[in-house]
Length: 278
Image (cartoon, rainbow, N blue to C red; front, side, top):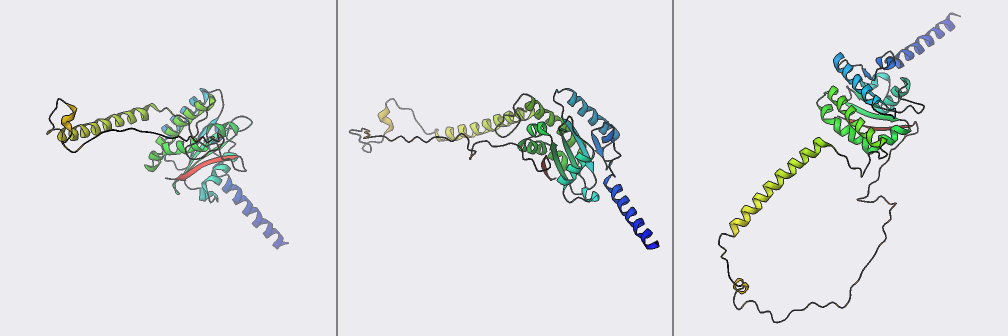
């Protein structure tokens, strides 16, 4: 009898510890209408408040409801997971994130110890809005701040660009391979750089040509430019017996080199990801 009681007591303690481990981040602001979870305490209260307010304002500006969520954890391995993608999916479902029946939303999660991130999207409209190409661009835009461990700026950049891609999707043209992306700041920098390089290249070419022309003397007749007794042109004619034209049909459905191909890769659980290290 005592052995049976001791056995059930051990099972009770074991399952209680598992429950406590899996719900260690359940009592968070995410469950009280906030969009940010910071386990590391690396974000100040003012920064979290500002980011949360910015997300809510962003969501209110659009008819299509799609949740933007931010999470900063110490280590996903602390929760028994071996990849950040598995952890982000569990985090998304466990905290009941997303809007509407499809639970549309995108989670930007960072694991501090592993220095890994994941952009995890869920829901049909989210997959349409944040294609594989789009999520990769989002991650690239946040990468400079991530490498500096400036997580506030990384989250802020994410919110800004996530809204840009949301606007594309609302207009019926989701951002994907082959899309034209207008970024005023990047465009201005690119134009200034191109003008500066063109000016420098033009000056170099002009100086080189000017240096070669120092010993050139203008002549009145064209014959003066030819050396005597070295050029004798009696007769010249170009004749063609036939010409050949080859026409090959272009397969519009193929996605070969130079042709855009995109879309969103969705796993069996209904999630799409873009993850990596910083």
